[in-house]
Structures are given as structure tokens and as C-alpha cells.
Image 1 (cartoon, rainbow, N blue to C red):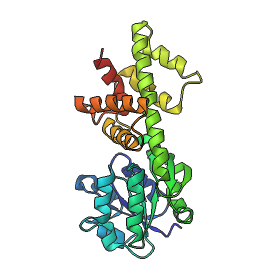
Image 2 (cartoon, rainbow, N blue to C red):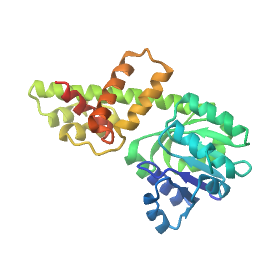
Image 3 (cartoon, rainbow, N blue to C red):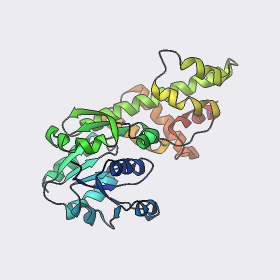
Image 4 (cartoon, rainbow, N blue to C red):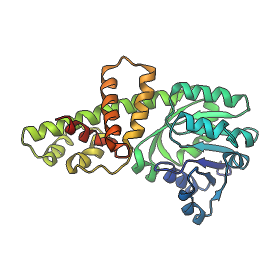
Length: 287
């Protein structure tokens, strides 16, 4: 399987370390990125760099996309000089972005017309886990195709969860990110309540981390909530995008509506590129 040639599209906060981990596992990796400024370090690693997705696909057995949203994925796959224009027989496309259930299903159907297999495999774990190669990866698509590319996914993640047919990976990712937004909002409210009750945020974080309510996500975000500094592991902008995708599936859920409004306010107030835990600053601004 190490002989599979991997083409990687999207070298942002997540795609950069993910593609490097594939390279470390002995796969031949080539890359395409819409912004040329992110390519210099890959040149130094001896990675092949292509000018178009079409050229990348012509030299790959598996193409991975890790870019912003549905329209971006559609563009690199089907647009001018897109992946389908250069795809080889039996190419597998793995999209690891969060694009929503409907988009994943539509892309899968469109790719089948070109004889291309599709796996939707969104991730969670943020930059920390992407760097260590310990991402959780949610997988949807044909199980036989998943088995073929599993060694590639294993280079990036240690918790691989096959969920079912196309769109299933996206479905569980939307559930995951809706709950995370609710958790972070509740944690932020807790810190503000601690201020009201004249308790140290640091002490509150220390105590809560020992209780049953503390999730790995909360423990990861406690330092941000205590310090008031929000280095970006997963941006407010991208989390809002995921919440909107979830609302497209079910617009009646009250907590989903609430966190969607709060994250929207955060983006509008200049926190778009701040970490998703900066929802604390949004709540603080309401007082």
C-alpha cells in the first residue's frame, strides 16, 4: 500500500501537518495549493508540486482534499483544470473537509460518472492532533474502497470510525461539532459565572478538570478560557460554517440555533480567525 501515490490539495492549518504525516509513512506525496506561499517548505522536503489539480490527479492514485467548504471542493474537483480532467482509472478521492451530508452525496454521484470512487472523511482533533498524527477520522463511502485507502488514513489518524455509505462521515462530524460548540459555550458561561462569584478561573479550571463533566475538548480549552488568549486550533469562521451546515439538516434545534448566533456574532466582531473557544469573548461582550 505504501506504493500508492498520494496527491494532497490544501496545505492550511490542518492540511500542512496531515500531508507531512503521510510522507513520513513512506508514501509518495505530491501537492497542490491555491496559495503559492505555503509551498516553499514542501519544495525543501522534495515533494512534487503541481500547478493544477488536473496535473496532480494525473500523477496520483489517491487525491485528498482538505479545503474550506463545499464550493471550494467542487471547484478543485470539477472546475477548470479540476481533478476529473486528469484523473486516472480507479482514482480515489478522499475529502477530509467538512462540507455537509448533501454535498458529500452529490460529489460522490458526480465522481462516479467519471469512474472515480469517493470517500468523505472529515476529521476532528484540531492542529494538535493533526501534527501528532492522532486525528479522529469519520469515514463514509464504499467499505471496500475504505479498506483500500485505510493505510493512508492511518498515517493521519489513530481513531478511524467507518460510519456507512457516502455522507455518513459528514453526518457524524456535524453532530460532533454542534456538541463541541455547545460545550465551549457552556464552559465560557461557567467562567463568567466564576467571575461573578469571585472565584479564580484558574482554580475553577483545575477543579473542573477532575470532575466527570470534563471532556478532552474542555481540558484542551481550559488554558484559553483562563488566560483570555485564543491561539487558533480551529477557527470561529470554520466552526460557524459547520454549524450552518448542521442547521441545514435540522433548523429546529434550540441549542444549535443559539450557538450558531453566538459564533456568527464572533465572526462579525472580528474574531473570525480566533480559536473557537473565543466564544468566551462574545459572551463577555454581551454583559
